[in-house]
Amino acid sequence: MYFNEETVIFYNGKFIKAEDAKENPYGQSLHYGNGVFEGIRAYNTVNGAKIFKPYEHYKRLKYGAEVMNIPFNYSEEELTKISYELLERNGLKDAYIRPLITTGVDMSLKTSSQSNLLIQCWEWGKYMGDKLLRVKTSKFQRPNPNSCFVEAKVTGHYVNSVLSTNEAKNAGYDEALLLDMNGNVAECSGANIFMQKDGKLQTPPKGHIMAGITRATIIDLCREVGISVEEKHFTLDELKDADACFFTGTAAEVVGLASLDDYKFPMNWKDTHGYRLMNLYKEEVLGLRLKEKTA
Ligand code: PMP
Image (cartoon, rainbow, N blue to C red; front, top):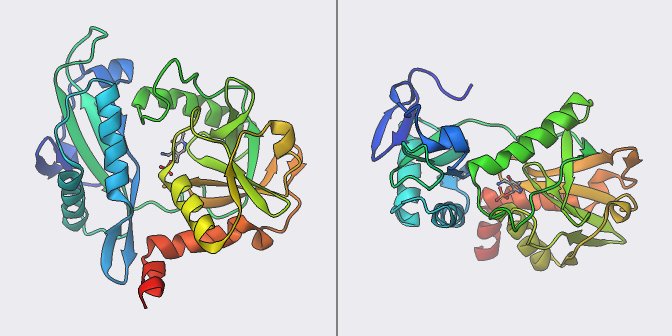
């Protein structure tokens, strides 16, 4: 699904066949989860393949490398250029792009002085599908921001996402909702959350969540089209009194929720701000809104 014998990846300065990539079994990423990654999408637009917000994604990748003390010298511009070339070499226009920085051979707990850059891409439909989601509140919390850099996409942090997703799926749900250490609603295992109440949207502020690039895009779209949106903490009880709810993320894009535990969101999805924003987001990533604005 992700690759075949033709697939090309970028690995430490070269474009090579995915099958020829060799990561060292003594590397720190494998043993301790000390690596940083990104999730980016390219869309097949009327002007050809267009990567959505590559600068923002690569800036977050570089921030992650910096806080983890991982040596990494590529610029956002270089990484974007490589990504476009990678899409072309793989004949892809609509694709998910996965950059990953791994750390070198070192069994100590100090970051290795060597690192590797891999960039992969593959065709990937909407990560959580198109159907409204049935979500379960997880018993796992998002990590305490004093225990790690929550806004860095560090590979090891994703064990928390795996645990909560396994828990939800094993109980017959589609996805997990995680609270923060204070009991406020935080986010989904791999996406941010917005709730609608009395015609207004609320989303948890930064601090205990991944500062999603999709989340920021949705906030901008709300401001543009006049939907009221506030970055504000809310509790599970408040969420279970909301009219509607949706998740946002690069892989998931915008996806609505049918229910949370036993609570069914009462509004018809097509009448919600989430539905409207889902369509606006699609236009935004396809470059159609830009055309509209400049036309
Ligand atoms: N929260 C978590 C935990 C995530 O892994 C992601 C995906 N990066 C998001 C939110 C959404 O972030 P973005 O919109 O930048 O993809």
